[in-house]
Image 1 (tube, rainbow over the protein chains, first blue to last red):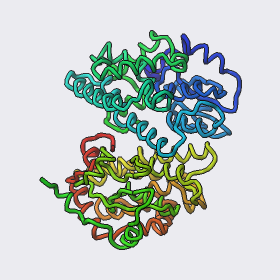
Image 2 (image 1 turned 90 degrees about the vertical axis):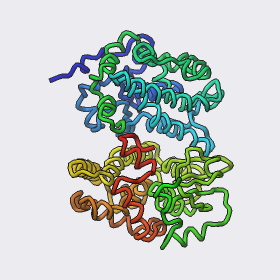
Image 3 (image 1 turned 90 degrees about the horizontal axis):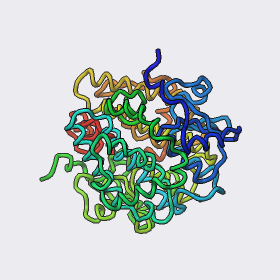
Image 4 (image 1 turned 30 degrees about the horizontal axis):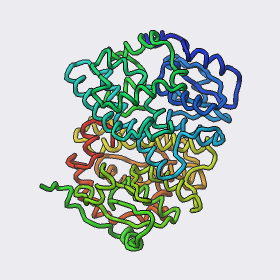
Length: 256
Length: 256
């Protein structure tokens, strides 16, 4: 028996459709993706920023193909198949792309070990402080829960925003820290339209930063038409979504 | 006003005392530690495995020195001060040590990018699937909660255990995956004595692996006398502990 989430629009649209079409030839590296998933978009932006060759394969996360599950039993997207092995976890994939393709510019992590560690600290901050608050806000049903979640979200973004050097997080260079938050910036109209979120409530710096990130070519190219996201986020707003992330938020567990 | 957790034994004891004494000279790298903290032990094991020079500074995490907080506002241990910058998060520190001291052997992560990614997937597994239920098991007061947590711990360790090549996770070479779980292996007498945990219930492979881990020199050298841990874990068992990890577990939040 299927679940409503299975009936998600089956492929990328708009700008993303062109990118998908341009990446159908077999390559050393296969990206298993879902066009709408923000975690996938992190890996996808990284591939596009660095110009790494890849073959794009659409996976319906709620109705997975046997081959996909065979190489990747955990069954989550994004996933990469490379040299007969599969890897997953969006940020682990991004680090892998940095290391496996060192000749592809530009580098999205600082070269100096301490600065690299500081970048990873901010990636960790986004995972621990930003994502749970943002997803918590979307799925919260009661006004008090929404208020509490919105406040946590503002706190996290204010802290992040204070550390933005500008124009990007680390200054002139677009980095993995920007990649890691970009997919949620381009989706923030969801919490603006439905949960009272305002970029201006974070800070002026945040307004400027968000506007810049959403214009980044690699971010624009990997985004589909807004109307097709509506069906999906509607389920999150009603707390009916069945993704692993949605279930974890609902149950107060760690995001898988 | 102080809290009971402040009255922990102030210094390392037993084997670890010698190590602390041997690392009092100023060095490029300052290691801020709490002698009893399992997260600290991950970074400490890494330093010892690789023979990296460091200066050890004891921090009472419940009564932090101003200088420590000045360079590391989040105030958690372990932390490393290097070149005037501070980094924290146990696994980020371990990766930093790999990046910053490439000439020190052994390397604790595989060289090939895809294998490195797979190692990171297992580090992520330990953080997401093993540590939270283990922490809940220790802090749970009611039988059903303890049973539920114990069952999740067994599931996680069985999944992990299936992939152990032996004697260490990746086979002959001791790696960061072993480092990441070792501090909890050497503390499992807590859940054995107080929460009904049995290594045998995980499986034979786990029994062998745990025995190999607890004999590893770097692990013995960074451990203190058992009786001094008792005061600390007693508070966790009564769910009175005030560490950030304890509070997060109690409140159903992500461990910071």
